[in-house]
Image (cartoon, rainbow over the protein chains, first blue to last red):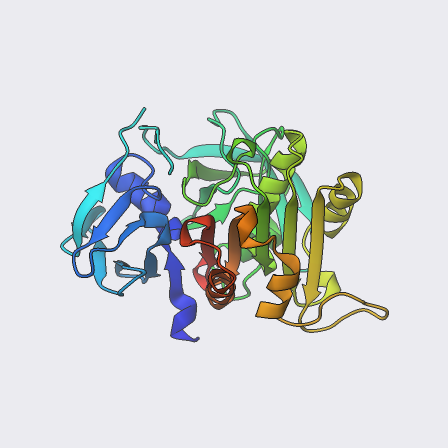
Length: 90
Length: 250
C-alpha cells in the first residue's frame, strides 16, 4: 500500500481525542511549535498505526502530538504544540 | 469557527439495526435505532465497536449518512475485503441485530443550513456519505441556497445513493449533481469520464467571488488534489474543508 494512503486528518482522530479531552477537539486550534501555523485539529495530518497515532502539522509536517495506547490508557506527548486553544464547553 | 463544544462523556450504547439498505454491490446502509441519541450535525461521525467471543475488540469510525431530521441514525459502509469490521457490517448484520456505537463525534467537517453557502460538495467514492447527510439535511430544512455536488465514482453501478440524488436534483432547481465516472461508462454517457482536474472544477465550482464554502471528502490523494485545485481557483483555505477517507476504515 502506498504510504500516502495511510495519511488521514484530524477528523479520523476525533473519537480518541474526545476520549482524552472530554469534548470535541476537531475545531480546537493548535499553534505549531516549529512553524507557528495555527490550524484546527480537523485539518492536521493523522497517521494511525497499531501502536498509536501521530498527528503532524499540515503546514510544515512537524509532529505536533503523539498518542500511544499504554495498558488500557493513553500516553499523550504534546511537545510539538506551542499553544492549544480549546473553546469553552457550553 | 466551531464554538460551544459540548462537554459530555462519550459513552458506548447499544443500537439496533432497524433497516438494511443495499446501495451498490459493495456498499450498504444501516439504519440504526438509538434510544439516547443526542442529535448530530451533518458531517459528523460515529464509532462502531465489535466484540468477539474471546473479548477481542475492533473499532471503526463511520460518517453519519442521515440528516438530523431523519427518524433513524444511518451509516453507509463500503466493504473492504481484508477489513476486520466492514465485511461483518456489510455481509452479516441483519435487521434486529445490535451493535455498540458512540457519537456523534467531530465538529470541524460539518455543515448546517444556518452556515449558508453557496455550497460546493466534492466527493470521491464513499466520501459522498457525510456530504449526503448535508444534502438530506438541506432538503429537510428547505434550504434553497445554490448547491453543487461533484461526485466521482468508478462506474455507473458504483454510484452510491444514485436514485436518491436524481430525485433530490429533479425536485430542486437550486441543487446540481454532476457525476464523473473514471473507470467505465455506460453506453450513451455524456458526463465527465476522468478524475477531477482543474478544467472540471473550474467548470463546475461556483466562482471564488461568490464566497462559496467547499467540502471535499474521499481518498487522501483525491482530497489533496481537489483542495489544491480549489486553492488555485482562489478559494481561501478557510472556505475549503477536507476529510480524508483511508483504508483504516476497514
